[in-house]
Structure formats: C-alpha cells, structure tokens
Length: 457
Image 1 (cartoon, rainbow, N blue to C red):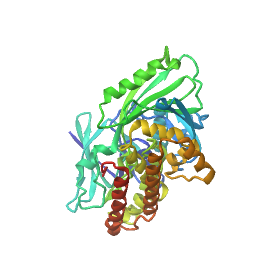
Image 2 (image 1 turned 90 degrees about the vertical axis):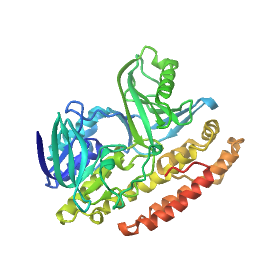
Image 3 (image 1 turned 45 degrees about the vertical axis):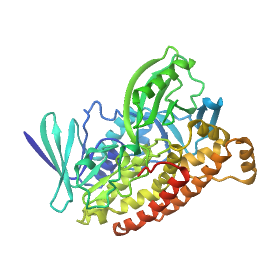
Image 4 (image 1 turned 60 degrees about the horizontal axis):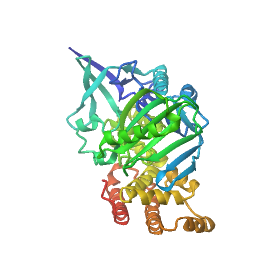
C-alpha cells in the first residue's frame, strides 16, 4: 500500500531545528508536515546533556514562555572543571543565561508549540529516500510507516534529521554548493544516564566537566535538580565506546555523592564537533541544526543554535516559495544569516578542537589549570579572548613549565581569530563560494602546520 502527501514544506525530524522551522512555516500560512521516525509517545526523547546556554533568547515562532516548563534548574551560573592530573578544580564563569532542562519535556513542548502553530506531525515514519527532478532539485522524500510506503511532495524539504543525516547520503547534491566534505572524524558520540541521588549535591549551581582517562573524551555531570543528575560522556567516534562508558561508570562508583543512586534513563547519540557546513542549501533543500553542524564544537551545545537555524531556514523557504523560486541562489541568504549569527564563532572554536588532538592530554590539563577561568570562558563560548599586561604576567608565572604549549596556543589563537574574520566575509552568492573556500583552506593549512594536527577536512 502506498500513500502520497503534498505540502509546501516537508521537515524531516521533530527535534529543535525541525520544530522551530515547522512553527515558522505554519505561522506564515503555508502547509508543513514534520516527518518523525519515533512514535508520538517517544518523540522528543533525545540524548542530550540537558544544559541550555542562551536560555534568555529564543525565536518567537515558539516563544520562550512555551518551553519554560522544561527548565528544571535555572540556578546554574558557572562551569566546574575537574582536573585530576593537577589535583585542581577550576571554576569557569559562563556568560549569559544558563539553565538545565528536562530534554524530553522540552521535546514535547516544542512539538506542541509547532502543532499549535498549524504544523502536521506524521509519527512512526522512517524516511528512506529523497526524490529529485531531472535537474537535481529536491522534490520530496519517500519512506515507510508501519510497513506501508509513504511519499511526500514539497516545494522545499528541510533536513532536521540530525548528525550524519540519511537524507544527505540519499540525495545527489554534487551539482550544488551543499557541503559534502563530511566524515566520521568530524563527529563524536555521546552517552548519558539520568541518575537520582539520595542527597542533594553540593554543586547544584554548576555544570561539572572532567576529562576521561583518554584524550578523546570528557565526562559531565549536569544537575537537573539538586538530586537529579544528567551524567554522561562525549568521545570521538574513532574511540572504543564501551571502554569510555566504563570510564563513566568507574567515576560514578568513586564519587561519594552517587552512592546509593538509581539510574532512571539511558540514551546515546552522535553529534557534530566540527565547523558549520560551508553551505547547507541546494535546489529545494536546506539542512539545519545537527544536520548542518550547527553545534558549538567545544561544548556540544546545540539547542539555541538549532532553534535559530531552523527559524532562518524556514523564513528563507517561505520567501523563496512566495517568489516561485526555490533554487539554491534563492535559499542562499539562509547560509549568510547562520554565518553571521554563530557560524563564524563556531568555526573559530573548531580550531581549538583541532589543537587538542595534537596536544598530550596531561600537558593540556596542566595548561588549562594555569589559565584564568574567565579567559577560558571567553575562549569556550566566544572563540577568542584577550589578556592585559598584569593578567598576562600572572599567567606566565603560574604556567611555568608550560610555556611551549602557551606559545603554541597563542599562535593558534591568532589564526583562529583570523579565520573568524574570514568567516565574517562569507560570500553573498553561491558563485563566489569557491574563492572564499580557497582562502579559508589556506588558513586551515596554516592551522594544521602550527598545531601539528592531522587535517580534519
């Protein structure tokens, strides 16, 4: 049995990018369907660290007031970075509003918000292919729902299907600018458990981070409440996951606050630790959120970025449809808005990920322990930082023995700053993208040379 549907826009994936996109399209009076592989009961249940940076600013398509019911801890205001190698705990202030959320409840609320705006949700639907016309323009998707074939025709397809999206494997995007320079080395896996502890933790106002015993991973403990903790880890995909999960379990066993704790939920996922896609558009097609690398590559935070990317993509789709032209050129402005809002910053932050792959983990931890917390916060969230003479002198004194690494760090920082400035000159039309990429790649070659890291792209 086969069923066909026609919509102005089809969104694949009921995550943050997908729901904000669908709400935006529906609020403009266009027909939009969200195709979601999970059941209605499970939709919104996504592996996440539950930390929300930028909780004070969300697109109006689904107002912040609609999602505040998922905010379980708004008292967090800093990061707590544990460095066992140096017997040090480093407090890092986090700029802007911060909250820890119940991600499943948040998922339900954004689905409700998009549905109330007028979006149709099609659950239990697994997309298996992308349809294109003879010129290569994307015209819809095809999948199955409970064993039956289902097809969707649309003027625009928006990919919100997450990391390593199947849609990008199935679509032939070779004649477009859409970024196909994607590999597993640019992604990490994440695993988290929701843990109920018997007594309130002392650090319920902090996001706790700790390096794993291997250089390619880190642990986190994020307090949803003073007794409900999101405990997880992130690690590069080339690492052995079960060994790293054992690192988490061993740390949980050794922390006194987790004695007698109960695990209530377990979930894993993949997420990008890379720069945003150079271009996330093709004829009739856009990608947003994790599906386009719209994640802070140093922290893994992606909720706010996905909300804005989904909104920007939908606004551009609506305009293109109203003008009767859904070509790559007509959708291009979406790329520009992403790069202007957060893409340049994320590209700069990716440079520090690249540096970390070429630095001995003990040296890296020693270096971090010697740097002022407020400057680490600037680097983690803005992609750049600065030191005055007095603070610089103190840092040099405290970091004796790591001066070689510091020199390398500052050479890398200068290149990261230059790279961000280049991203701020992102092209205004697809025809000039290749020229812009040539200069970006020249800067990246310098970064690989200075850091000694293997090429990531």
